[in-house]
Image (cartoon, rainbow, N blue to C red; front, side):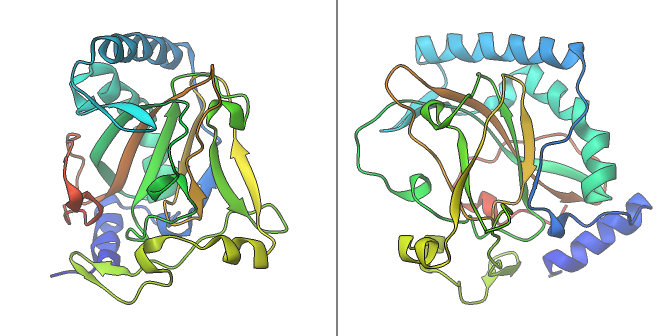
Length: 251
């Protein structure tokens, strides 16, 4: 079986471009947008809200409500296509695809924080990235803005992945990829939030230290999330629902 690195090198070779390396990514927010894009955002938000209201195709936990299969919405595919060449040319230097697509609405909660609501990194392959698209206005942490740890220069802090090929890993730096608060404090890392109006989007490595923020009462965050990874050819999006999505197939 090929390693993630060898697979990515093959993907880049097939694409015929070697300008960028996705494994170097931390966070990127600079994307070209037009009126067509914002029309898609508005349409998708309206449809997602309707599903949330009707509890249709949804899951609910202590902190959020989410769409079980966001690939049912045509806008999800059209937004992916809208940014495809920008992301392929500038960041992957290869074709890429998604094996998980989510739409989640974070809600106020007094439940005990755990899992993604505390400092962590996803410990996915170095070539696996996430693309967040805000479907609501996010002005501050009150709205549940995405939060990441930043060093003294304001840069995201990235942790080495333990995964070098599907179903195989080396020892994790932090057990279960949860980052102790003591580590944050001892390194003087600061909380940094990504805010923006509906339609704000950013591409990032899930291996930066980050956490979800619970919105305050009267606030919420709605976000569309793509999990992207390299592919040797351009393929259709698909949504894998299950625990194994982090070990993406070498397509």
